Length: 310
Ligand code: PSU
Ligand code: MN
Image (cartoon, rainbow, N blue to C red; front, side):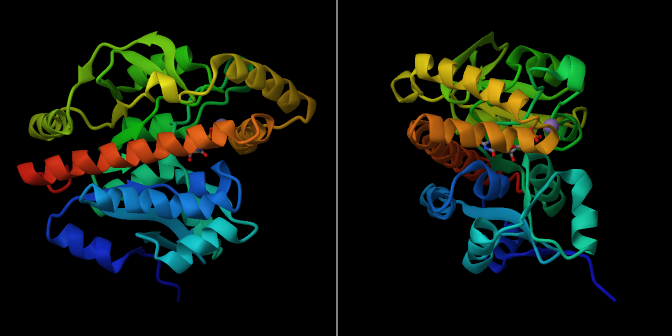
């Protein structure tokens, strides 16, 4: 009989037991969000960034039906290089396990698995959200609904600019997901520093984020997630004119090719990477590394307070 449990990497298991800082990382950005062969190099670089800031990286994914928190290098290599790795949201996890699949976890699935394992901080690039045609297609990422009921802090550069950012912020409010800007009161637009929307709250330091998490746990009144929106410095963003041109083009191609459902996000990201001759890729990598660094510093601050699960 198959035994379905989550396997913790050795280093992650030790760190959690000893209440040392751990940062969850997702694998969908590796398998579906970044082109080969850079994806594997970047995946390793993200983990190294977390280590350099004093925390243990826990990249989450599914290997041959086994859900792993803290993939080792061979497993990470497999998810980055093998064909046919599925993109797994929360609803897919059990089916993928039972069928012995290889799979990469999205923000939704990574958050849910990380929180269940006792990890309180997670770094990604950009959160999923409400797609632009959602009024007709109903396409809203499961990332949002999952964060409504998952106690984890997600460090991201806002939501991908391919989405309807205003609608996504409204949904986050409805769902009860807290959003704070990191040293800003403007919501970032992933490739762009500023997506054009104000935020109610901003925090100034990793320690302050740890305070927010401690207050949430102390109150016991907020079951959901916290988004820490970490914008790129303005001189590091993608050229806005190039961004807008590429996006308009990508949305037209999406319609031409009839791409829908979970293929939409990887399709548009791949279009950005090829149409900007790698410029968007460089920006995407910077975003993820900056978020990994901040997430690690938040995890360190939370562990210092004695909040093991942040
Ligand atoms: N951010 C990135 N690259 C990505 C994603 C986010 O920089 O590839 C992935 C995340 O895993 C996120 C997913 O959860 O896209 C959202 O997909 P969808 O819109 O199908 O829910
Ligand atoms: Mn979708």
